[in-house]
Image (cartoon, rainbow, N blue to C red):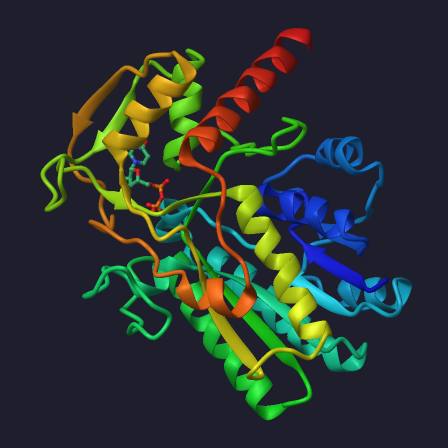
Length: 344
Ligand code: UDP
């Protein structure tokens, strides 16, 4: 079976993807520097699939160590590149950290691919490249808007680097996956999101507030031009998202890609507001989330949701989990984390 390198494989989306890859028989090698994840994630993966993936604690910015890693695990067929810094606010404060981590890692991998004869590359991009789209739902052909943060800019520049590199070396191929807002956890509750410090994202803040770890959730603005005034996003189940990576890899390995670089939106096609997420979370989990409306957060997009029809038709992939089940899985995972802390 084909061998897949997953950078950032102990992270949130990475770990769920490793599980789905192993389930269909892929041999997985994880490279992660554990800067924003825990080695314990390997236990969670092993509990679900019965297989402990190979793991190397390497920073993808370190070219020499990455080169050695490719030598050690000869015959890697595809790379799924998740490893990146992802906090928007931090990227504004430390732009060079973001440009260095996210761009040097990518360049290293693209340089090492021909040396080690790896032909296929999947890249984690984001709907942030669309900014506030003029037309909703947003399709892959929507214009790329000026980035609002260094983080967002690294995603735009990375996409360009990939396109230019593959254009110059057409025997390589890449799939760029633009994620909307991944939420939830694996149904086994063996893996899930593990934010370090105060969460920036909505869902971990909601679950931590439900657990009593945070006093209240701050809702950033209720005066947007949306039905209830709060921002609208396309929240997608993380396992659904993970499955799309498996299909993207299989499509490239089986030579079914229609272009050297293909780009897909990974979303549900449905927009939900912050208030709708909170109400639904409260209802399905029987908990209450104290919240307060505060000022808008700088750089927030008012509303964005995907037109996922290109991914639906071309990949034969659709997000199938309901938001209710997804919010249940997030709460089960948070409670498990709470019990873990108690046991320690
Ligand atoms: N949000 C919020 N309170 C929080 C975190 C997020 O009201 O503590 C809102 C945020 O303004 C946005 C939505 O939740 O409208 C999703 O934010 P997140 O950071 O999860 O994702 P992104 O901004 O990247 O879409």
